[in-house]
Each structure stands twice: as C-alpha cells, then as structure tokens.
Image 1 (cartoon, rainbow, N blue to C red):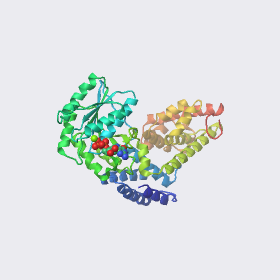
Image 2 (image 1 turned 180 degrees about the vertical axis):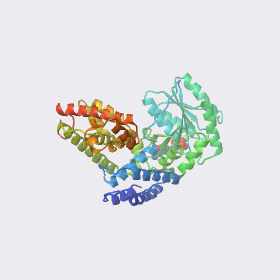
Image 3 (image 1 turned 90 degrees about the vertical axis):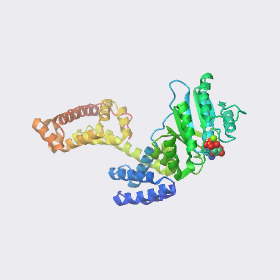
Image 4 (image 1 turned 60 degrees about the vertical axis):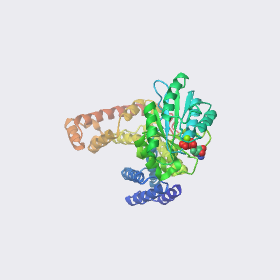
Length: 441
Ligand code: GDP
Ligand code: MG
C-alpha cells in the first residue's frame, strides 16, 4: 500500500493546483492500494468517496502544495475512520468490572487475557482471570501459564470433575471475585476456527449470565478480507463494545482495522504486538493511519510546512499591529478567517497582552457565523468598509437585505468591530508584542 501511495503522491507533487482530474486519478490509485491492503470493498468505496468530497470542497491551501494537501486529507480521514481519540475501558460502578473476550480460535484471546491482566495490575487493579474456554484440552492450562506470567489469580473448574460448563464457571467466577476482593474479572472464552452457531450461542449464554461491562472482540490483524464477515457475525451473535487488534507485529497491512471499525462502528481499543506479555498498548488511530499510509516522513514535512506558514502569518499580523496601521473591517474579516483556519494562532493571540478578549471573541465564532460575517462585509460599499461610522439605519437595512441577514446581525458586527478596533489602537500605541515569532518579542 505504502509503495503505491508514495508513487501516487510523488507524481502529484509537481503540480500546482488540484483539478478534478487530479483528484480522480489519485483516488483511483488509493482505491486500488486499499484493496491490495485487504480493506473490504464497501469500506474502500466509502473511504474514497469521503476523500474525494473533502478534496473537492477544500480551499486550496496556502501552506501546502496540492499533493501535500491530498496526503493530509487521506491521513485525516484515515484517523477519523479509525476512531479519532482512543476510548478507555469502562469500569463498573460497583466492582467487579467484568470484561469478556470473544473471537475466533487463534485470534489471541488467551494471550490478550494475560496482557490485559498485567496492564491492569500495573495500574493498581487486582484482576481475576477466568478460564471459560473448556473446549480444547489445553486451554485451561494455557490460561494458568498466562496467569503465572501476569502474576494474577486464575479461576478454573476443578480438575477431575469431567468437563465443566463454561457458563457456570463464568457465573461462579464473579462471586469468587467478590469474595476475594478482585475488582476486575477477565473471562477468556472458547473460539472456533470458523464462525459457528454453537460457539456463538455459548458466548451469548456467558454474556447473559454475567452481563459484562465490556465485551471485547479480539481479531487477528492478519485476517484481511475475512475481518468483515467475522466482525459482523460476532456483532450479530454476541455483540461487543470494543475491538482488540492482535498480531500487529506481523506484516499485517492494517486493512482489517479499517474494515472492522467501519462495519461495526465499535472503537478499536487495544493493540497486541507480539507473544510476550508486555507486547500490548492502547490503540492509537493516528499511528495506525501512518502505518497504513507508511508516509511518516511526508506527514512530518506537512506539519512543518503548516507551522512555518502559521508563524509567518502571525508575524505579519504582529508587524501590522505594532506599526499602528489603521485597522479596517476587511482586516477584521481577514484576521478572523485566518485565525479560524489556523488553530495555533489562537494560542499566539492568547499570549499577546490585551488579546485575551479578542481571542474569546474569535473563539465564539463558528463556521456559519464566519460565512454570515463575510456576507455582511461584502454587502457593504467600499466607503462603508473604510469608515463603518457612516452606517446608519437605512444603510443597515440595505446591508442586511443584501447579505441575507438581519439588521441586528449587521449592528452586532459593527459593534464588535469597533471593540476590536479600539483594542488594536490601544495595543499599537502601547507596548510591543512579546512572545510573537519573527523577532517582535
Ligand atoms: P486464542 O485461541 O484466541 O486464545 O489465541 P491464543 O491467545 O492462544 O493465541 C494464538 C497464537 O497466537 C499463540 O501462538 C499466541 O502466542 C499467538 N499470538 C497471540 N497474540 C499475538 C500477537 O500479538 N503477536 C504474535 N506474533 N503472536 C500472537
Ligand atoms: Mg484461548
């Protein structure tokens, strides 16, 4: 995937402006690349459609060249589909918190049970591992080995009693946890090589017996296209709250992550990255996105370009202020649009003396507000823009009409502008602006 995308983007990099043809050519390549990475077809379609829409709708960035802009859009969309921020485990109000693991045989449930137990123990919890996989002869023993490595207790059916009932074991384990002061119960369940009704029913029975606080669907990242059918079957058969991706240490290309997330809408919460007990971490959508893209260096470049541009803009604004130039409505609009586009400048504004108020004003403006403000200012005559004091009642009505807003919206804007202008004058007459880039500090 990465090789493909890299070649797509390098062919784009030389062009000045992004046309529809560019976007189409690029998204065609991205589509092929994602399919090659084993992302399921419906997911690929949805993803490509979103990227296209955003690439078309996006203003041509001043900070980035078109190729960088497309990379950024692809990356942003990947992060968004993969789930934005990482979700944390939900703990029960009254312990124990019951966590149930479900997934195909070999997906890594038992290994995960040990990893999760270690991770939780290190955070001060006292987990209990529960062997509710009584299908395979060695399953209980395997969990007991995990428990030793994780240094946590394991609850298992008494040996010699014949095969126990996993639902019963799960139910009794919760009582045991209460008695022994365990605040977390991790239930390891049986899987089959393929999706199978009996296994699903058993998992659903365990779920009904213990009403888990979290059901985690454990899925092998190497599963590829099958991820969709498997995830869907577990979603229908048992239901789950979160996903754990395992075997990310392999050469899995991330397709499963994208598919499962898209199909089930459930967050990917953890990543398993090896056979050792410490090979485990919270899932990071941004890292997964750059793994799928494998363009870390280009992403860094984009970040730098954006940052440099922001700093130049901030410096320009600062020098205009300190030079005491007349602050017009057009400056007001330009400044608001700039600040809106560039998050970091908001922070710079906060650092400038006297600008706190301005920042609050700017922060309270949303996109639609900004469109309205732009419409109002554009409906003014040049004379009105230069000297808003001349805007009387009839002019206000005309402007409101022309901009499709109301008279009070126009008055409001003019008042806000006068406040900003006053603030600018005060600043220009007064001190310098420390903390600004560009040597003004
Ligand atoms: P279960 O059947 O779902 O309980 O899966 P197991 O926990 O028994 O894991 C099946 C195999 O995959 C074992 O050999 C594990 O050592 C291995 N395994 C589990 N998680 C990972 C992982 O993150 N990376 C690698 N490389 N192997 C893993
Ligand atoms: Mg197992």
